Image (cartoon, rainbow, N blue to C red; front, top):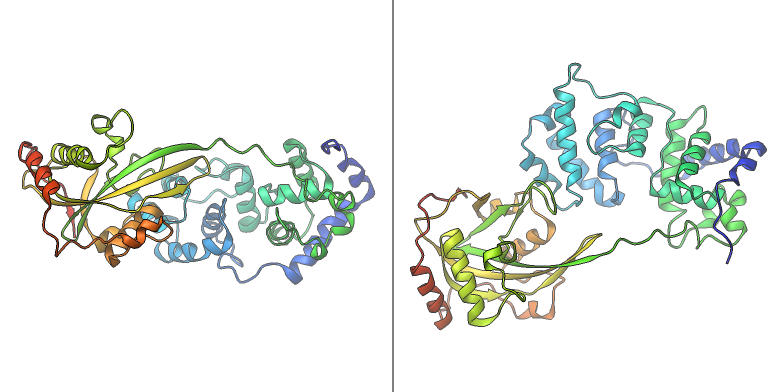
Length: 420
């Protein structure tokens, strides 16, 4: 097998003048074939450029467009974003993923609004000091908002440079990216690099016949397009189980806010039976009467609710980059005691208001299923047999047993907040 191409090859290119030809061909290609009509194009507004660049981190353009439009309609500038509560920002971001980006945007907007000048940083070096803005993102903002000659190096650009010049070392790629910058047309050139990597020099099934620099591409000349860049080591994916308690009292549902840091930080989720150490069994969550007893005790002691009926909803898997989350939701019809515990980030929502809150995508799907009286899509075959409606069902023997556990509990007397 051939050795991995190192950083020395591009020195010959600098001497031969192919650097100037590379930038010139990309600029000409972008003007004829580049992507157009995107809502963040054609503006020098640093706020909108910054918002777009952050949203586009690890997210496809077609996914970002509707979120971007809604975001700028609600928060048209830094001041509006800085004034907004974080809950509202996260609600608009709900479904886009990588929620730390939304928290960083909010923190950065407040940092700018509270700075002595109240102005957005105007250089790549200053932009890099904002929360959630790395070197490549800072350079992209500086290029499109202020015309600075700065080099970007996102995943798409790394792939283009690795294939065309045979350079895979990270530091060498940064040096090469800086050397390739044209004297004029920096905005068009930068956008061309992004578009070329996204639409032509794709990771899988690259369209080399449409590439404007195919003649000088080393990977194509050596038949190594599929090999370059060398794949990175995949992160180890851990496995985690969750037992969600979907508590319904009439058309109200109980949600709790997750801690600010960690998975789905600051978002509203269902209470998780597995997160309470006192209710977690030694070997998984029990089933049958033992499960009903455990859930009934947990609801009574922790949430001040009487369990009337429990149904097993279809389980599903939600995949993250580093985590495989296996979720088993339990639909619990409850009666709320007048004496209820307070706090804990918990709140009762009407279903409509719950769907407007800051929710992870799986929680939203379960709530939509409850509202429509159907099972969540993309789950197991058991979803076809699941029904949420129990209006015509009488409490069975197991529900009566659960009620007896509730009678023994006397929770504190403060009410949980309710949003209707």
